[in-house]
Image (cartoon, rainbow, N blue to C red; front, top):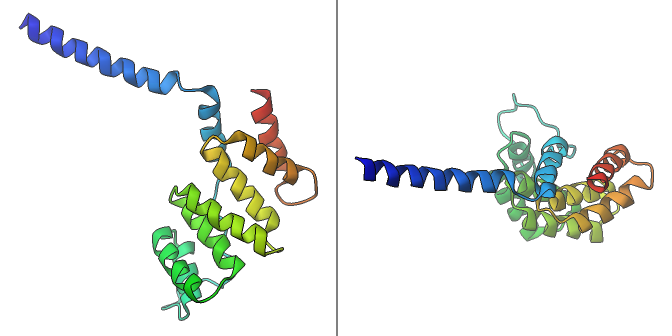
Length: 173
């Protein structure tokens, strides 16, 4: 019994130590960026279609995609957005698709669509920079984050205050 106890206790101690190492010895900026992301990230609201849960059926593909997006079924929304993109290139579709990818944790796919929006459209510039910055925060790419937040903090827009707050948090720790 003594041998069994020693083997079991050493396994527990080893696994406990690994958990402690992963949790507490993780780089400080990684913990901080996870917290920042959790505080500031929220999927962008649906502004391109009217949405009412009492509607029986969305008729167009765009309405179906946006209905899924609004209901939080981001994977279904992504599939619908892909169908739309096959026949038309629309900045709003890329923007909401990028947000759906972010909501499912697929930051690379989100960034691909956000960068497309920045190159192709003038309507979603500030929103796109904000969400791009958050996607970089999520993956601890602070130099990219800082560039985008600095741009947002230097002119009047809906994200200026939040961008400044995050920059101050990142730079002071």
